[in-house]
Length: 326
Image (cartoon, rainbow, N blue to C red):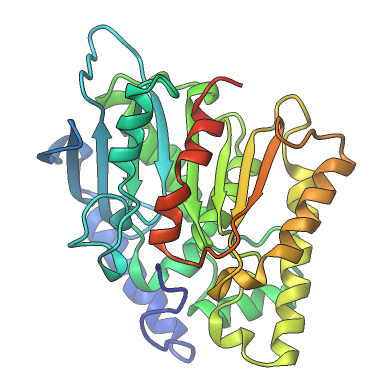
C-alpha cells in the first residue's frame, strides 16, 4: 500500500522547503535528457528500461521506467502508452511499498497475448517521496481556506500544476521521441491509485487533448491526509473538500461521447471511506448525460482493501476498459 502520509513533519519549515526544492531543481535543470542512459532488464517477456534521476525544471528528479512488450518492433509499429503514477510499486517487489507490486507488466503482456488489448507501453513515474501528496493533490474547486488546509496536510504548497507540466512538457515528449508511440490522445492514457487516482483524473480533465482517458483506482476522494481524518471536525472538512472537487471535476471532464474514465473502490481499510464520494461522482456524470459502462465505468469490489495486492487482483478491469476496443 502506498502511504498517504508525508515522510516527515515540515509544517513550520516552509521557507526551508522552498529553498531546498529550488536548489534541487537548479542542480538538475541543466542535465541534458540526451545524457540519460537507461538500465535495461527483461521482464514478463518484454523489456524494462529504467532512467534514474530523470531531470525536470518543474519538479524534483525521479526514476522513470518504461516497459515495452514482447516483440516490440519500433520500425514497424506505433504503440499506445499508459502513464502510471507511483512507478516504484509497479514492477519490482524490492522497490515496492510493502514488497507488493501491481505486476503490471505481467498483466499487460497476458492481455496482449489474449488479444484483449493492443501492444502497449507502460511508463512508470516514480513518486517523489515527501512531496508525493503535494504533487498529486488537486486544487480544483477549493476555497483558499481549504487550499491552506491541504498545504498543511501535505507539508507545503501544492505542486500539482508543476507535476502536470512535467508530465506533459518534459516526460511525454521524451517518451514520444525515444519510443515508437502513437502520441495522440486516442493512444495515450493515465492511471494511478489512491492519491494517484486523483492525479490521473486531474491530468485528464485538465488536458484531454493529451490524455484520452484516465484510470482512477481506489481514488482518495477526501484528498486530505490521514491525520486530518481522525476526528469529526476534520472529517467534515475532508467531506467538503472531496465533494467540492467532485462537483468541479465532473463539470470539467469531457462531454459524453468523448469521455473515458474508470473508477473503482473496495470497502476495507481506507477504501471504506470512498463509496459515498464515488456515488456522488457517478450521479454527477449521469446528470451530464454520460452513459455508465460506456463513457465511464464505476466498479465496487467487496472485501478489497487499500493495497497493491487488491489493485493487482483487479487491474485487468481498467486495462481492458481504457486500452481495449470500446
